[in-house]
Amino acid sequence: MASPSSTAGPWGGAALKGVLDGIQKGWPPGLTVLTGDDIYHLDQAQSKILDHLVPDRRDAFGLSIVGDEPISTGALVGSARSTGMFASRRVVFLRDIACLEGDPEPLSTYATSPGRESFLIIRAPKLDRKRKLHKALAEAGVCLVFRAPAGGAEFRALAAEMTAMAKARGVRLEEAAAGLLLDVFGPDLNRIASELDKLAIWLGPPGPAAPVDAATLRELIAGSEILTGWELADAVTERDPAEAMAAARRLLDSGKEPIVILGGLASRARSLLRAKALTEAGVPLKTVIDGARAWYFKDALAKGLKRYTLAELLDMPARFLEADRCLKSRSLDKGAVVETLVSDLTAPTTERR
Image (tube, rainbow, N blue to C red):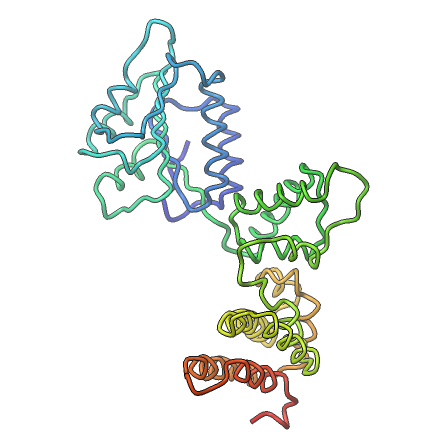
């Protein structure tokens, strides 16, 4: 099996598929390092590999799990090379690389000649190649990289996987709702799985219920400033002055911090600017929506692209900076600052100052 570098390789979902294919062929003995920022697929791969090598995790003779206390590279390799009376296969799993210390030479030597039934699995989400030991781990044996998705095609594959996760829990998501989960939690499928579990409990036993829409989902999701000011962000995106002002006042009346409202608007403005620049360059709208992961507000985005010029959108960062400075002034009413910004952003071109 090839050993990809820790900065390249396929995204985590594709890397997991490679692991499953490798298991079908028989997992190679020796050193296997699991690294990368896609923790969900890394954990899946870790579980699949260990299940394959040690079907009964209670088998203390075949599997040793270390990492609760510091361990030297020599001791770790020695444990992997040891053989017992009751198991021909020896599997050692280091679950926390922070506990590993010492010279990398024992690991490098082990990786070149491990023994037919000796397996050493190391979980190392973060590898710092500037450190001698980490560099050796990235280059010795089999180093599997689980990278978070970076492009539109990979995010579409991630969205499909997320939809399958929801279906397995008896939850059907509308496209906009699925897009909302991705926008809030990005590629963190562990967080998404947690939200889907809560959603499944809220919905009750599986049945012929209608698909969950974005409006329902945003009332249930916890822990994201992106959700603050949903209606306001859509109204500004669509350049609807009346609805935007009404939404801003509702947020202020509910006690939302003006700086948080400003942050949510700035995030949407950045998405709108990127989308406008791409469409002006001739990129199809569908590709723009996929690249921006704007599935949950694609209708508002399509309207906004027609109602704002590129020059107006390029002017927005300066307006947000000005509003941010005003919010830090003790002499200005913070609610008035937000209302002035919203009015200015959505005003017809001829009325903008």
